[in-house]
Image (cartoon, helix red, strand yellow):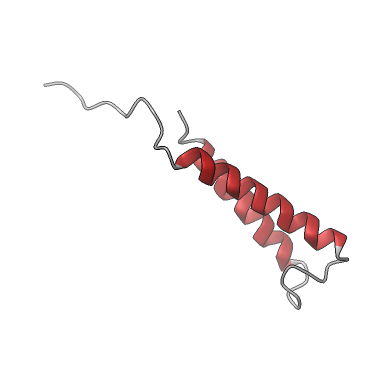
Length: 67
C-alpha cells in the first residue's frame, strides 16, 4: 500500500496571508515607535510590541508551510 504524499503546492491563500501578517506586524511596531508609544492601541503601552511580534510570528509559522 502506498503512503499518501503531502501536496506539492501551497494553497493559493497561504502566501498572501503570510505576507499580510509580516506587513501588519511590521507596521504595528513602526506605528508604536513613531507615535512615541501611544498608538496603535492606546493604554496598553509595551504590549503593543507583543501584538506586532505575534503577527510576525504567525507569518513565520505560515512560511514553514509554503512550498
